[in-house]
Length: 399
Image (cartoon, rainbow, N blue to C red; front, side, top):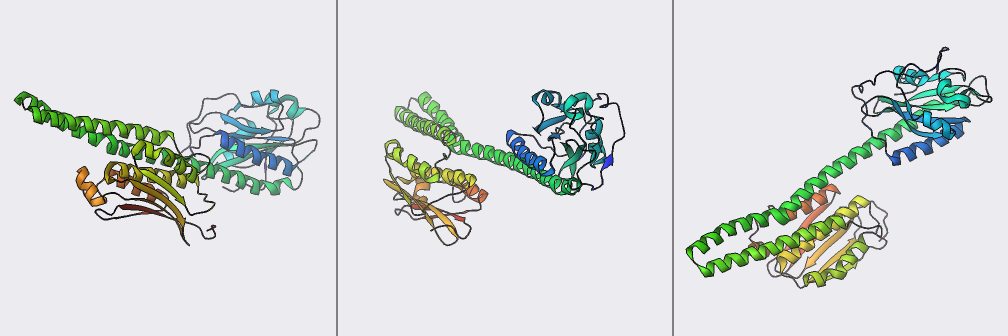
């Protein structure tokens, strides 16, 4: 909502309004949650505004999503003893309350309104007018920013012309903070869903198999069939070992995200211990020089590669595997290749469902979709498998 260029003058009043009961949030109010990152961003913007306007100091206050008193988010130029008293201000208090209520700029001189709380900072020698400007998030008024001026009878002539652009800048910061907050919530929800899928793939199917085998083992024991009993016992023992290995891999999977040194370094770290853990030689071939991806893409690519390698271990019967990273004119390609049995033969050996039904494959495809990529699998019995991920890239990346 644009800020009015003509300020509203507040008439003399004895001080802030009496403390009132917290008001419920307004319909459509923006449920933004202040964070240290948002505080720091708003503080940088406030410092620029104070310097640009030639003000003595300034503060930004936001009404929390649940309503109630305005909370001090950041301050510039206020003495430490003032900050404590300014931490919470009622939403109907003085010029700030009027700015919230009318959604308009408020101006008053230094002898009114905030004097009770701010003491000499607002009323002592060398102080002048004060401003309260409403802040918005998605059209809802959710706070104010104040500017306190020095020794002047009235506002500098150019200040009111600045209020529209600087208010719009702060509104944009708040809108973007809410978008990021929503993106993180969506990402967390999707990650939880993916974790549930991976638990199903790693544990639930194995436990269901063991439960069926336990019933058969019980029948064989009752019938005195030693050979069948031993067979079912070995099936359960093998499945239990696979479930335990899957659980350990899942824990490692979520404890070891891509580190600050990037995707290639994370893959090379995985390769160094891969043979000792699996018996499969793994080679990383990086043909994409100076590879830098957004954090979300790096994380998803890494997890797709890990899932593909898990399938190599579980199903392929391979002795060698490699991960190849290369750029084309329009995309980044990441492929995982092995010399194993091939996808069709591997499914028959593992007793897995048909095409499109296997959870691990669906997890990889979902991860690829989240970063705008496409997954392709090329395989033939006895000729190994290639899992290829293609991610569109902006033109101009180095080859």
